[in-house]
Length: 150
Image (cartoon, rainbow, N blue to C red):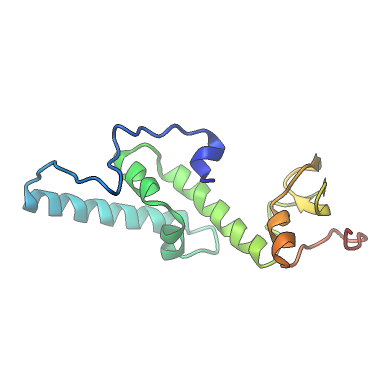
């Protein structure tokens, strides 16, 4: 499930060309190349800016984005703040995969699958980001004083 599905962003299928269809729109080659170079430079600058406050390189962020994400940024459907938020989520997910508690996870929560874990809010939850680690045999950090959950 992509972040678009999770957040309920509707995709405009009319505006997108599926990978198996041909784009029959003809462009002037020189103008198209200049426009693409400008978009690439602006996108690279935005990726770099988004990665300034997280432990993530612009290349790692770019690899985490889908082609639709890039197209939406170019079309102006989301801005640099959204790109920075995505960078934050990607960086946190990388930390979670390594068994490192992200800085924003300051509350003790209880997950039905994992038991006591660090999350953003103190709550009882059906599932948590640490569930993926538990299922894959990766580390699940516990709050002090808590033992491994059965």
